[in-house]
Length: 166
Image 1 (cartoon, rainbow, N blue to C red):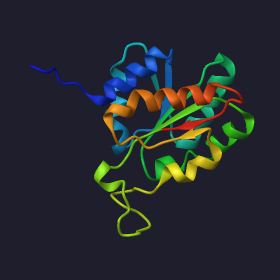
Image 2 (image 1 turned 60 degrees about the vertical axis):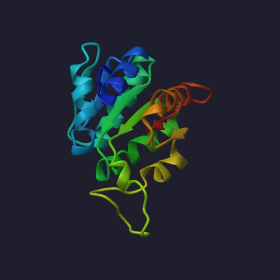
Image 3 (image 1 turned 135 degrees about the vertical axis):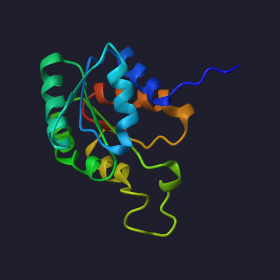
């Protein structure tokens, strides 16, 4: 019999294995499962904020003080869009920050009808973030989570440091 697991528990475990002890974030429907998994991980403290931009700014401060990448968790749509100013600031100041955004169902991640939005709040946040991050990706395949997360982490801390968006 195969043991079932939550993919979001894998994300929380990857964060903990990389030494993440604090995650800053704002709750939202598309990020609730990840938030729950992070909150259940005894190694990680979840600090909730009132705005996504504030969460990124707090993660920057944490990174500057601790010398480790700051980590942020937000929901999709407007939640992801609200991180842009903080991400740009981290990019310009070379501060390693990992922003994890919840996502629409994979079914809604393709814009087949050339709509401005798809799904509930979906828009192509990855394309918006690419010019102001060292790495930006939308993970649609569970088997790619660890490798894409590793790429995001390593991109943020190597060379001229900066933010990554997953």
